[in-house]
Length: 277
Image (cartoon, rainbow, N blue to C red):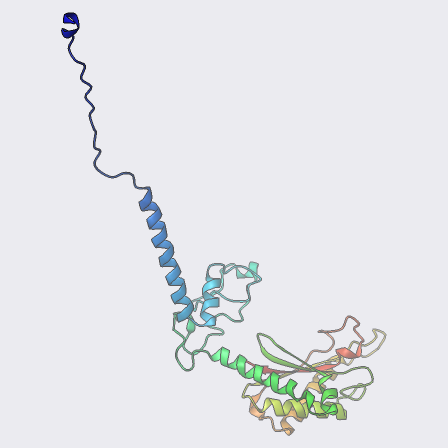
């Protein structure tokens, strides 16, 4: 017992280390990304609410101005009118964008909110044209004769405006053979279109189209014939009450713009009346 009492006790001392200061900055990067994403989101929501459809198309096309299939310009009003300097190579098409060529009165590409009464000029025109289509097609249920008339009418909206196409069918011509003398069918169709045209104030353009003739003909009169039929349609519309000041263009297209695969098909004999934007 005496020998063991001479041994000194073993004391184990544990030291607690307290680290002060930051614990890493990874959370700051994540938080910054979150705040940036939220800011971008709210900016996008604000732009959607504060811009018109034409402005949004211009903004979208601004980031890809050289895509040839995009039918909207870049939305600028400078020297290039919103087009790329490489437009000759990429062939961008102006149509719905807010360029100087097609801009509204308030130049929507400058960032107007669209709340002004005349800021949606192109939209208003499109609505009027749509109402004209509805009025035209809505008459089909009135009589059997009206249904027969509508078999000779197709309509479509293009960048130029509302196209009302009057076309012939086998055994049902619009004009007497190789003349510009209208048939009773054509007279009824033009009267119908004249009534619809008077519901809007758009300018009017007329294009005459005829089918191709056999190449053995010594004298091909397709150019003269298409122009004469377009002119006769103009006179018929004006006699039907259309203001002469609204007539902007009368064109003969001959057989250069066929709609049927057979160049000599009767369906290619047609007249296109365009209510311009």
